[in-house]
Amino acid sequence: MDERKPPLGLILLALPLLAFLLAPVLITIPISFSADPYLSFPPSGWSLRWYRAAFTGGAVLDVFATSVALGLVVTALSLLIALPAAMALVRLRWGWVSAIESFLTAPLLLPAIVLGLAILIVFAPLGLLATFPGLVAAHLVVTLPYALRILSTALAGAPLAAEEAAATLGASPLRVFWRVTLPAIRPGLAAAAALCFLVSFDEVVISLFLTGPRLSTLPVWMFHHVENEADPLVAAVSVLLIALTLVIVLVVDRTAGLSRTFVK
Amino acid sequence: MTATDAPGHLAIRGLTKRYGGFTAVDGLDLDVARGELLAFLGPSGCGKTTSLRMVAGLVPASGGRIVVGGRDLTDVPTHRRDMGLVFQSYALFPHLSVARNVAFGLEMRGIGRAEREARVREAIALVRLTGKEEHRPAQLSGGQQQRVALARALVIRPQILLLDEPLSNLDAKLRDEMRIEIREIQQRLGITAIFVTHDQVEALTMCDKVAVMNGGRLEQLGPPLDLYERPATPFVASFVGRINQFRARAAGGIVGLGEARITGAGPAEGPVEVMIRPHRIALRPASAPVEDAEGRLNTVAGTVARTTFAGDVLHYEVAVGDAMIGVEEATRSDAGPVAPGTPVRLSWRPDDTLLFAAVARDGRMRP
Ligand SMILES: Nc1ncnc2c1ncn2[C@@H]1O[C@H](COP(=O)(O)OP(=O)(O)OP(=O)(O)O)[C@@H](O)[C@H]1O
Ligand SMILES: [Mg+2]
Image (tube, rainbow over all chains, first blue to last red; front, side, top):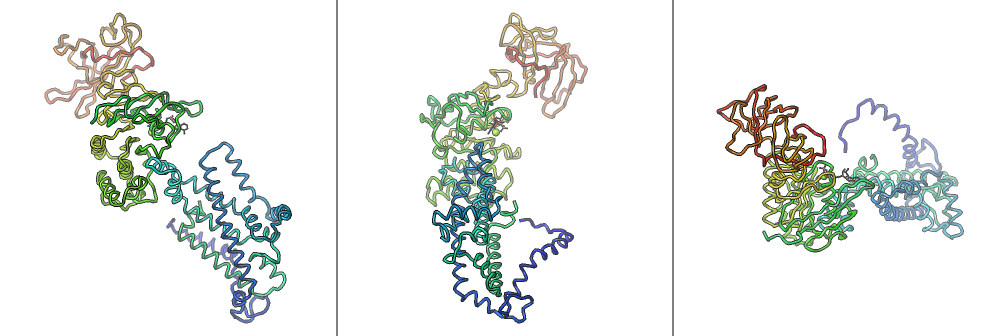
């Protein structure tokens, strides 16, 4: 990682910007410690009651578990599908590769609301609405392009000559992949996994079309909760989410190097 | 070393590589005997690396066969060819230490830990990197990385060792040492090897045979001495060693050079390329007798145009008619350099005159 210190002027310019971006997020922190039964700022008293409510109220834990399970399954499938696809795109050098790549990344360009509606129309007759497999499939549509992009970049930077050297030393293609390619793209894999998980965990728009009373995700549950109750429970949950996100980002940074994986 | 088996331990037949309409390697035919070190010598871009990569199976050949020990390997994948390759770009594993890099091939062969460690230690000592075992490639200099690549290829004792300019990044002293080292290891282990280089000294000093390549084709294959003394083409003559080259006309086996008439081996009639190595020419005062005890019967008169002192040798450029002939003489303590403007007589043996049917237009001395 780069050890250079940014100039002071840049820091002075960046700080207000950062404050502007973070202020709405940061305001949830005091609210989450509110003692009031409704959303208000500043709170009239302080307590941990909303955190207690988050951990004891069954609904929050249920949708949290669903979201985590969904995030993990979606992440695993995204990597399993995107890695071979990226290998093919980067290594086979077909003439029409860039066309395939554009096609696979197209979902990123579509408005999520349109995508959600389209998925609803397709999934309804298949009986996939408000089912876990349905949510997995829908989230894959959004996470795959990210995974593909990051892994393609990582693979393009992998040392081809070292792979050839491994082959001359007697390594079969599979062992070349395990022993040389995989270590080289490990930061990319970590970044892709983190991003897929966060995107899936965060997804609201498409999930809104596919969830129901039987099955919901955490963001969708929060959305509905604010509509109906407007108590500081969502603020407490939000703070927990921010903490979780920070932990994931920190883990990626420690294991793979954040600037190395995201800032390419 | 065993006697040469026929066809060679490594036989290359009609090996060809085309990239679109461009032919990078054009019908390469050669044999390397068991335990022999063969050099691929040629200018940049002549297809040396491409040929080597086809032998290793890293690029598919457009045509031709590769046979090792009687077994056709043309369609065998790289990892089952048992060939060590030292890459021009080292191609070390960046995430592994020096020791793990060297151990890689042994691990792939399932060699036990004790033997593996012993062989790795030995190989690292061989390339003088003891003490650097735990370094990552990025922590080594270019020359050190090159030596790791060498150790990594040698440690598996491959049937064929392919070296793609393995010494290009070493300083002169280390390069000399490594040349001797590689040659010694290769002979001791009896490895059949191809050594790619564009350095003619390396090819001539290290190798049993040299294959001179040009524009994807094999120009000549032979022992270093043959290449130097009996080059098959003007290209080989000018690429291997320094040589004078100018155009003249032969009639009845006699070549006219200014006023003089000279003889040599080659075409008897028509336009010819005359090629003479600068150090095979004697430079004497114009007044010296024409007779020469050592049979230097080809004699021309000229005027010294330029004198360059280079320590061991003196370089002269001598104007003969409208041609300029380079002459090289060992410096002597009993005679100083001949000053420019001095009329001189140049003489050399007819055997040292190489004549080729003229093709290209070039009238100057080649370095
Ligand atoms: N993948 C490729 N696509 C198209 N042309 C190629 C490719 N690889 C090599 N060539 C061409 O083939 C020719 C031979 O290349 P090669 O690398 O074998 O040369 P070389 O003799 O090893 O040169 P050097 O001494 O510079 O290493 C060159 O003209 C090169 O441009
Ligand atoms: Mg090359």
